[in-house]
Length: 274
Image (tube, rainbow, N blue to C red; front, side, top):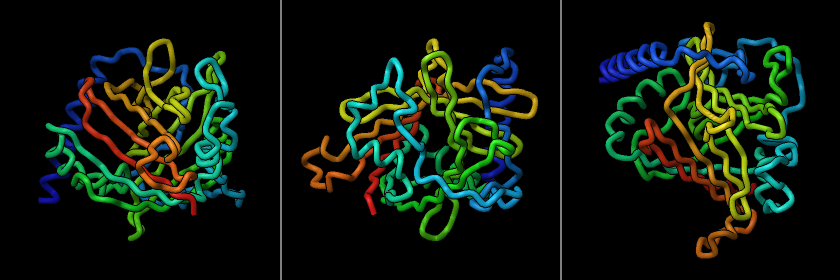
């Protein structure tokens, strides 16, 4: 069953890759993508392949949320708890639930065999169960990844199985600063460029591409292509949900993803300050 699942998903993935390489002739070159690619397996020890200098680890996803101040984002009206979460992410415990939308549930179950094998993007295939993840942050020097402020965020479950390995950075174009994320895949990476804007007392990150760099891209040694995927994060303090009875410093986030405009995945997060 496991081998069948791997081959089934690989054949489908190769079909779609070939289709988009054929259709998308314009190679995206203006966005500063990460040069970090993976081998057949990624895993939480991905960085052991590199001779990294001993640098103090960052405390969070970003050093200073004010860095994103721009036309669509005013950090002065952001909830202090959301600001703290982004700047001190390592001091939070994360719990999450996944919900695969119809008709993608069967495909998610099959894909979970592959993601478990390569130890990347390793989300559970079943809906609704509460899962815990641990976080580790590592500073990445410019000699390894030239993007601004790059840091690795490595997420594992309590059994030390890898859930997600990604490299977070930023880039600025004109007056807009983008979140620029790269998740290494075999011989490539999946890069996500996110717009940031105010959302109630929290923030929203999205890949809306209109007149922006926002989007999800497959980056390979021969170039990069835009994929028909989109996503949105909405991050709010628990005080936005009075009936939740959660501590005021707790963060509630929703992550949604679409393919060809069809929603296929929703992930709900709760981040508790430790």
